[in-house]
Length: 343
Ligand SMILES: [Zn+2]
Image (cartoon, rainbow, N blue to C red; front, top):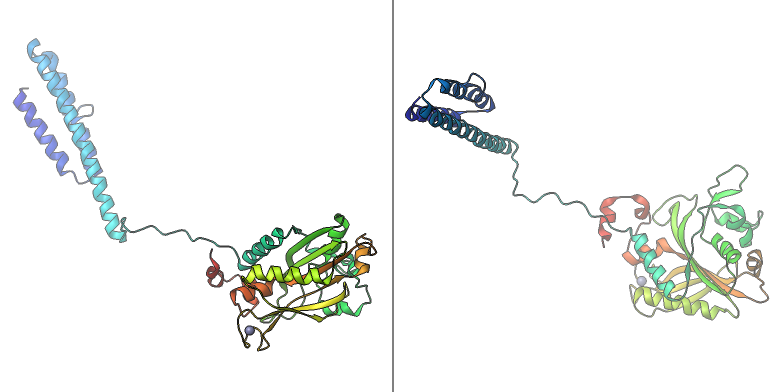
């Protein structure tokens, strides 16, 4: 076979490759030219019958032919794959230049945000941050807080009981951790206890069966109501970034004596608004001097030590902070609501 004939074979083969419409066509070309019994194999088989000087020429020519066809097939495969992708892209309306979908970023729950803020404020005043069980014993939730079984104050707390014998309950306030703290630490000490509380109440815009409180307890020698007021004023200044007036009204809670309701001057208005119900005062928390019985229950001598305690309504503070008008939003789990508090 002359070099011209070899060139013809190559041109014909490459022409077929170029016109191939798919993988099946390319396989056919491979079979016709490159595989056993194909054109290249036949050329190579004819070599031994040639004159020696022609053998080398035809041998290398056949090899070049084989390589050229292989290369052309590979290139055509690439082209066909790209065309296929382009067809799919058009069919699906897919545009690879568009930005990809961004992952949704979560954020801290408003209760968590305010809790952390309060923890920072009280930690800076030397308070320890304590935790306690949410499923509590009657003893810690009531008995040791000077609320014995027959005490009418129990009716203030709509309790979820966990057993038939009324020993176990979902804690109705964070106050049981007062007793646990008194048992655990020797005075003097200061502690706050942020956490969830539960009451079997009819749910409405200002009542929720699950809500958050933050208990505060300070025990030491010579602790007075003055320390309580000073502490609350400092905390409010940090929280609202300005001095706010506070006032104490007498309040009755079995675990404090004397007991108070602490009100704060409304930070949102001058002469009355819907938050303070036009009174310019907002009820902030029950508080008072720890009852001697409670100190004794906790193993602390009330002759030597005194202390104050407060029960901040954490859910209420969150509502004040973010001007939320319905407590049910807090535990509702509605992402449209929660997404507003991204940070
Ligand atoms: Zn107001």
